[in-house]
Image (cartoon, rainbow, N blue to C red; front, side, top):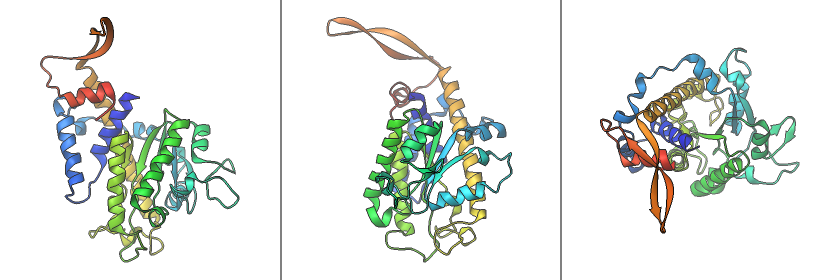
Length: 309
C-alpha cells in the first residue's frame, strides 16, 4: 500500500483547486514542486489515458454521503445503462453526517441502507468490498460540531472504515457551497472554504485522495452558482451533477496518469538489498540506488520507501 500513499498524495496535488493565496495553499504548491521533480515523474499532461480506462476506474467503488450524495445517486439512476455512473454503489441518506455516522443504529438513526437494512458505513463497505470509497459529508456537521469537531468525526469514520477494510482507497469529495445569502450559522461559504482546506490537509497527511467539486460549481463570488442550486440553499440540479460527472472523469484521468508516471519512475530506480551493521550483527534493509544520470531528491526516496511525505 506504500505505492498507493504516493498516488493519493500526488492526486491531491494535481487535482485540488486551492482557494485564494492562503499559506496552506502556498505550502502545498511548494511541496509539490520540491518533492515531485519532472525529471523523475515526467510531464503528467503528456500521459494518455483512454476513456475506457476512466470508465473502469469507478467499476468497484462506493460513494458515501448525505443528501447531496443522495441527489447524485438519483441523478445516476437516470443515466444510460452504458454510463460508468451505473457501476457505482451508493450509501447515502438525508441528514447523514460524520457525527451521526458514529452513533449506534436505532429506529430513528439515519444510517444508509445496505440491501434494505441499516448498517454502519464501515460494515456495509466491508460487505461490498470495493476498491475505492468516495466520501462527501459536512452539510450536517458544521453547525453541530464546528470545524475541528467535524474533522475529528470525519477522521474517525475513515479510521473505522480502514479498520474493517484496510485495502480500500479513500477519496474525499469537498463540501459544496451554499447559494449566495443562504448561509445558516456556521454553514456559510467562508467556513466551508476553511473546512475544505482542512480536509485537503488531512488528505495529504493521511494518503487520501481529494476531489474539488466545490469550486467547479462556484460562481465568480465563490458561492454555489444559481443554475446549480435546486432549492435556494445547498441542494443541486441535474446540471450540477453533470459537472460532478466531468470532475470525476478528470480526477480519474489525473490519478491514472500519476499511477503510470509512478510505474515509469520505478524503472529509473533500482531497489537492492544491502547488508547494514547494527548491534554487532548484520541486518538487511532496503536501499534505493538511483541511476547516475537521473536527478533525485530525498523526499521522493522517502515517499517510495516509507510511504510518507
